[in-house]
Image (cartoon, rainbow, N blue to C red; front, top):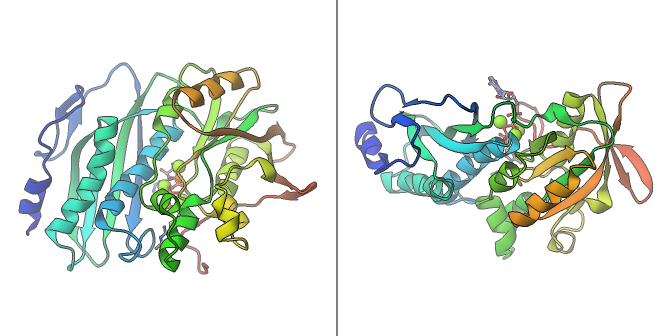
Length: 322
Ligand SMILES: Nc1ncnc2c1ncn2[C@@H]1O[C@H](COP(=O)(O)OP(=O)(O)O)[C@@H](O)[C@H]1O
Ligand SMILES: Cc1ncc(C[n+]2csc(CCOP(=O)(O)OP(=O)(O)O)c2C)c(N)n1
Ligand SMILES: [Mg+2]
Ligand SMILES: [Mg+2]
Ligand SMILES: [Mg+2]
């Protein structure tokens, strides 16, 4: 394998997006869009930080790297359209394994009819997959973390803590296929988020680092207080059975569930419930937004007691980590 034969091997056979003018093959890709706003994000997965060769097959690495990016597009309420892939490849990865990484990405890309339109391939020390995504959203309909208002219902999709529990299942040899799937091949909530388009105001954030972080990001961006009831936060029933001393921490700070946390007015809440029903998305009310006299804060109510929920999810560039 060399760089150029590898690039030949991952050339898309066909493209789905009609706005594409030039895909993989030139110095850069070209697409045209005049009627909608363009949403773009990049997320990176690094060997031994986001995955290890014992915990993920190459297929899973590709799938989850694209899932993490599509989750950011979902959190903006946008429809995914394109992705570019930057690869750092250490010696020891074969062409077959790299093609498996691309097969993982393609599975999700086919589901959402999105096109691979470029990337970069270089040699390096650890496998690093960085994906840039582009999506479209109706003009001025992007969903911001800053949109929470006093009186809003706070909601969460799916179940939280599954991905962290799945990682532990893999490490400890516990056979829970559902949790392991949630770690390796999470499904971003693209369809649910898109079906909120007609709502006048929704705040959204995706759960990559853990709801404790994500709720604080909404609170800060909106200068509001978020009051969460732990008893309402959704988690899978096997979590307390399998990991009784860890599950509460993982529900709040495990991260990588790629669910959505959001806020909406009580008036528009029934539309969110309907969107969840139409897209088969589990959805629960987990608390209320209140006015803040400071820069925003998150409170957690548990067994009748209230505490401040600080940011406690996964944070890079920290010296210590468990
Ligand atoms: N190295 C960087 N250079 C420029 N912008 C960055 C960098 N890292 C993060 N950002 C920006 O900071 C914001 C928050 O990033 P991040 O916490 O990674 O979001 P998310 O958890 O949704 O992936 C985003 O607007 C992102 O584009
Ligand atoms: C081998 C391994 N160790 C630890 C983790 C846990 N982990 C790594 S990064 C991360 C947080 C999410 O990644 P980040 O790069 O912060 O994504 P972003 O918030 O930018 O979407 C978590 C929970 C893992 N998935 N795999
Ligand atoms: Mg990021
Ligand atoms: Mg995000
Ligand atoms: Mg993060």
